Length: 151
Image (cartoon, rainbow, N blue to C red; front, side, top):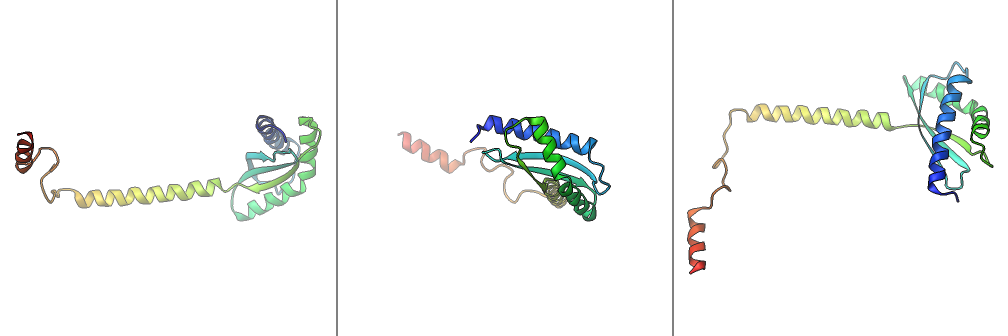
């Protein structure tokens, strides 16, 4: 097993090599506006998982997935040539779910902000049910008890 530093460096290098190769050498018309977001490699350096995002709809994502699958051999050859490792890792491409998750979180935050604004509007001009700050000063009953304990 390789150490984690070597694995991380190799994963970063594979990410750069795949991105540059897609930009310069792969001329597949099915390849959409793709961004390589992350690469993870197994401890034995035999398998690399490349995460990517595609700008566009579901049809463009499917076309890009097919283009990446067909270019896998060229990409793996280029990774082997530019990294110089003894065994070139096999590449697996996975559509990154982070953008969809981030959009869902943004939607939930916007919904919470709208609900906070609605509650703020309802509370405007209202008064507290009791004293404004019931915990600020001790009550008269509490002062009597303290005096009795000190005696």
